[in-house]
Length: 194
Image (cartoon, rainbow, N blue to C red; front, side, top):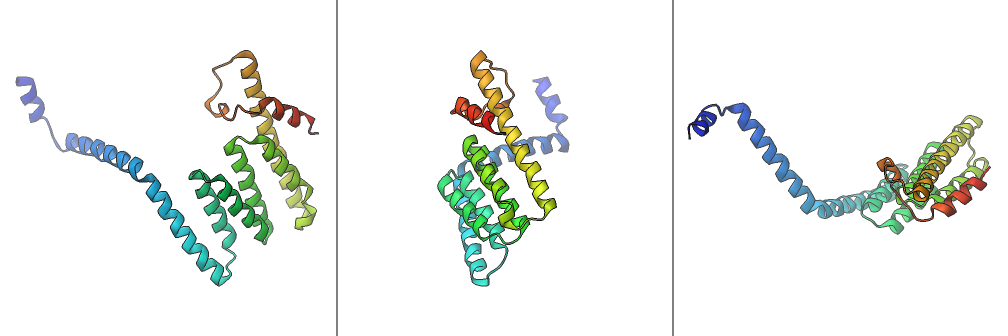
């Protein structure tokens, strides 16, 4: 009893602040978990309204908005819609920054989904179309560096996953524990790339 009264006697503003902060964080985590889908849907509604405004005004911001809507749909698990929006952004991209940015998003979407073969296929298509986009020589060289960098990352992931499956290795870094399907076919395809 004496210990409890001594602790209550020493209870001050700092202790109150710590306890109230912990309560606030806990309540916010519970609220976020329970309302996440509603918040994401509200964001989607706002993006759709913005898209109507951009369509009416003919703004060049439409490419960026389509990429953001695609990202939101990917987060919501609507992969088909995400790719539709992203492909629309690629089709209407006007300058080299928009073209490159939209393609990078496409590559990252495939990597996020663990679909490495489709990513490599899109990388190859993009690489074959550099001249069609009217890129400068410097932009082409930068794109080649980026394309080959992404291919090297995919190859590294595929090799690590393949090795782990062969030797039943379980202590791989967390970022390598993605997309175990198609590892052998991914390796075969990637190793044939020159």
